Structures are given as C-alpha cells and as structure tokens.
Length: 242
Length: 242
DNA sequence: CCCATATTCAAAGGAACGTTTGATTATGGA
DNA sequence: TCCATAATCAAACGTTCCTTTGAATATGGG
Image (cartoon, helix red, strand yellow):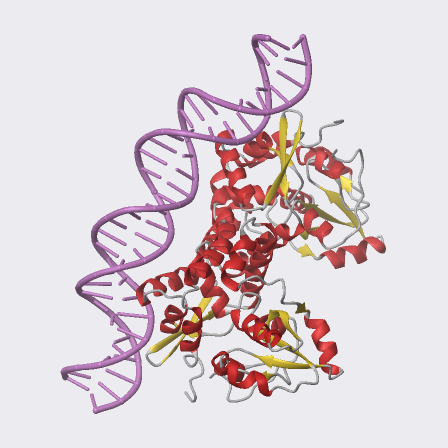
C-alpha cells in the first residue's frame, strides 16, 4: 500500500477554509444551480432544440409536448441560469442558447451520459430503434468524400431549418416527403443523410428506407449543429432569420 | 420580419414523434439524470476535489464539511450517474472521476457558470477576496517563460498532492509553510504560483503575500489538473499512488 | 382605445431531494 | 473468533421542484 498520500495534508485545507465555508458553499451552489437548470428531461430537450436555432415559446411548447405555461416556466428557469437569452419580435419572444459555450456544455453532458449511464443504450434503442444496421460517417470523412464527389448528401430536416443553414451541396429532403423524394436520388453514389444531431430520428428513417430499397446509405455520426460548431462550411438558402 | 422560418415545419416533428414521446422522455431524462448528479453544491465540490485525484470517503467528507453518511450518499448518487468510480483498498474505498470526459464536463460547467451566472462574481469575491490586484498568466505563457528561465514557479498545494504530480521545476511551498518559505525564494525573477484550479485559495494567498513584500508575483490562470489535462509535462516526486 | 394573441405569474398538490439519526455490512488485525 | 474501523443503508423530517390551473401583463392591429 505504501506511503498513503491521499489522506495526508487535508487538515491544512480544513484549517485554511475555516470561516470561508459559507462563501464556498455559495460559490459551488452557483455551479450546481447551472447544472440544476439542465437537470430536467424537458429542459434538456429544450436545450437540444435551441441548439438548432432560436424558437418561440409556443414552438418550444409544441416540440416538447408541454403546456405553454409549463414551457415558459422551464424557459425562465434556463434564462435565470444564464443558459438561454431572449429576443422580442412583436408579440412573440424568441429564446436561444446564450452562446456557443452553452452548446459545448450540452455536448459534454450528452457525451458523458452516452458513455457512462448504464441504461442509455436501451433508452436510445427505444427511441431510435436498433441502430446496428445503420453505419455512420464522421464529419471529416464526409468532407473528404464530398470533395471527391463520392457521396450524395441529403438534409432530412424540415425545410425551414434547411433554409436557415445547411451543409453546402446537401439536397433538401424534408421528413414528410421522404417517400416521394428518396427514389429520385441519383443511383451512382452512396447517400449520406444528416439531420439535427445524434438523437434526431429523421436521418435514421431515411437511411432505413434507402437500405430497404437496396441503396448504399449511411448517416452522419452527429448533425448540423455539430458541423457548424466545428467550423464546417455552411450555406444559407433564403433570407437569414431576422 | 419577413418569412417566418421559425414556426414553419414543426407540425412534421410533432407528427413523426407521435407514439415516441415516452421513449423520448426517457432518453432525455437520462441526460437530465447526469446533470442532476451535479446539481448540488456539495456534489459539485466533490467533483472538483476528485479532479485532483482519488480520495477516500472520509477524506471527501472532511473536505466538504459533511457527515460521512451524507457524503457517502452523495458519492453513491454520483456513482449511479456514472460520474465517479470506486476502488477498494483494504477497509477503505477510494472514489475517482470515471474518466477525463467527466472532468471536461465539469470544466464546461464551471466555464458557463462563471460567464453567465449574474451573481458569480460576488460569490467568487466572497470566497476568494477581490482579485483585481492578482494578475494571471496562461498555461502557454507560463510554458514559454519557464523555457526562457524567466520565472520561478511555486506549487502551493499540500505536499502530498505535489508529490503525486506537479509541473516540472515547480518548488513545493505547502500552504501551511507559506510564511516560512516565501521569503527564501530567489529575488531575481518574477514568481508564478499555482494550486488546484481557478477556485483554489492557496495561489491567491501566496501571490497576495508576495505582493505585500514588494515581490513581482502572478498566479497561473487555472491550476494543476488543467495543466495535466491539456497535455502539459508532469513530474512525480515519490511513489505513484498505488 | 379595445381586443386578440403571446407570454408570464401565482397558487397548490404531489413527488423528489438533502440531511440527520441509528442500524447494518464488509474488511483487517488481534 | 471477536473487535475496531470504514462505508452503506433505511427511515423520517422539512425543503425544493414539477405540473396544472386560472389570472395577469405586454404588444400590435383594427
């Protein structure tokens, strides 16, 4: 066992922290308050949603299947922790993530959770189906293949989100038009689908559908926000969100 | 205002998510559970403490001024979320952060909090005192100055932590020997102090004490775990922690 | 100026959390 | 084998949190 380093010297800490305890408590309660803001499933969903771009309260309420009042409550709580900010446009109020650092925090949380929480695999299976037949491609791999014209890239998010920003060269295939549009894709190359992130259902749907038709298809390992955040090139179709 | 992109297309999401709601809830509750594990001031302190290295339950209890039973409770909760792991050595159980990703998550939380929570400045002031007279130096600046022999580096953590690992060339100045050892430092160069991280009091104490003696002194902007995590060189004095 | 719409606020019930207390389990040494 | 030590567990208290309900506030259009 040897020289036990681990319990030596702590008396010192205790001594020099005497009297500071209330202040230390308050400081760490501050960190805990921010963690607490994310410590609710619906609020976690909100953060994932706002990572896509700003959204109105009603829109958020709709997306997370909650009442507007409750959604507003959750949004206010996130705002109090500094995670989201607001912008008023007429009678509507738009919420957004305060900055990219908040997004980074969310990704770090997602990462740790998927790696360490025992049940997470069952949970993702229950939500997204068994993903074993769906192979993924990394961002850098995709970038290479696009440069060499070796892949057809499709964006399977709702049209409005495509318009607000997408990976250059991506073909818009809104999720409600999968069946109409997928067959018309060129048959010469592999197809890569992406949507909102690793927990977005659309890309999985598209890949499954293509595989069922005998096409070669993969999904981007994460999604558009990750692509954008990592500095990948971006293209906007229409007016920017004002 | 133009074409309102933000509320278009959401019906689709709602439709294709119908029936999946319970699974989606469960998945995001999983993320929330991990956030919830950090959503308590004492548990946040535990994470910051374990970022320094593994510690026994009693040690942790001592450091956070809580009963062993309560501390054990908090540690079990962190373990259930996958954030910490244990190792038994005889009659003691040592807790550690499960991996570096957990540390990254903690740093991301610390970062977001210090940048966005309104009261955090008052809280750090209350805990660490007004830091306006204490200037900092970044890790890369420090590395440069060390290479050019332009600074004396002191490690003001308890001796056991210094022994477990420190920045090469750092002189150990345990916090309980500040007054004895500080005056004997060479007077020809600026002194840089570091300890456990941005919220560790020792480096501040050392710098204040040196400034009061008319010496040029700064503190490393963060601390040893950050240095180590960013790939900086590390030196160990004695046996490794077994 | 009034009304419709979008959002927030306040109150209340039930659930989950944090701390304390006292008892229980597991290990190593006598 | 028995005892001391280290850690966990179980129950119970008060506190905080989440959701729902109904009312209140702010903005823009008629």
